[in-house]
Length: 63
Image (cartoon, rainbow, N blue to C red; front, top):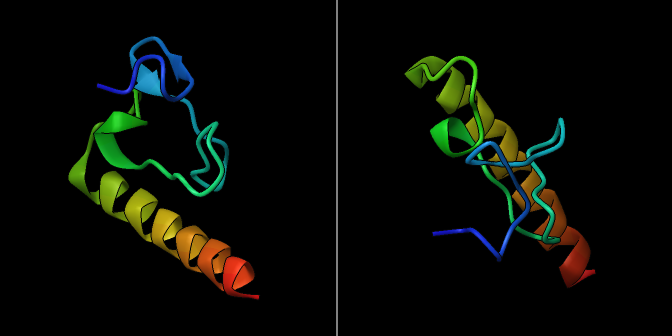
């Protein structure tokens, strides 16, 4: 689904430590980006981090 649109590694979306993908303003979390733990609690934490980063991105864009 994301191949050719976002950078991937071993079938998972590649994210940095703040859930940023290779495309500015696009974030990934949970099993789409987590090849190690694959646990709902880990996905929830990653989702919260991605939401915080998305909010910050939108606030900066609104200026």
